[in-house]
Image (cartoon, rainbow, N blue to C red; front, side, top):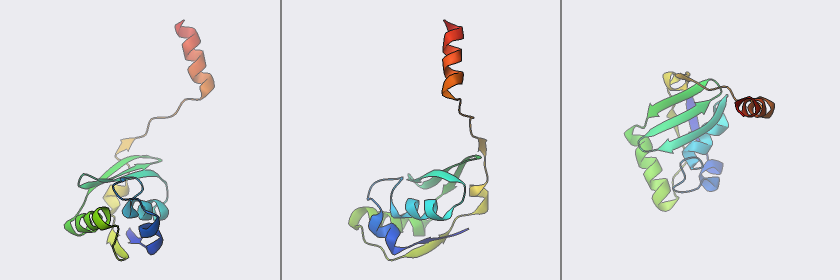
Length: 109
């Protein structure tokens, strides 16, 4: 999947924030089914409706992120988010409703 980091991502992105930087904002805007994404520590970690995915950063992306974090200045660019990184690798836990949690508490007492 081709991700395009646009001017709006750059200007609205926050430096040193792995979930709101320009790259994270671009991925969130363009990747269907994505709940949240974290970009940093040499990798992109995505939390999807189906689970978790992980992709290592290439040198090009590392340089762009470093320039954004240091100076908040980069030109719009694009990069490839590989399909294996988008596929669910770990099943996401199902969330319990408030009623279910309260019933479990009452049973435990």
